[in-house]
Image (tube, rainbow, N blue to C red; front, side, top):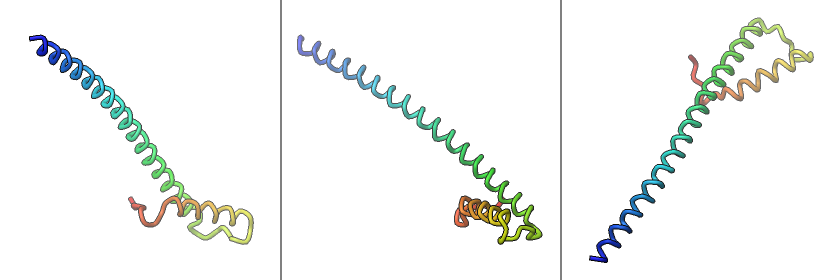
Length: 95
């Protein structure tokens, strides 16, 4: 009978330890999922801001007002190039 008691005690301790480990992993997993969702929301907002900026810049320069030989034109061209680069032609979805 003594061996059965030791087996029950060992199994009980194992169940308690495994339950704690599982709870701890689940808690960490939920935290990571929350961070991923927040990052995804920020990425969507950033993508929208980039698209809006690009559209506004295209609207401003719709008549090709800015010349590339002056300082304002160079700055405008650089900003436009940065937005085009951030936008990425391969993964940009026109909405």
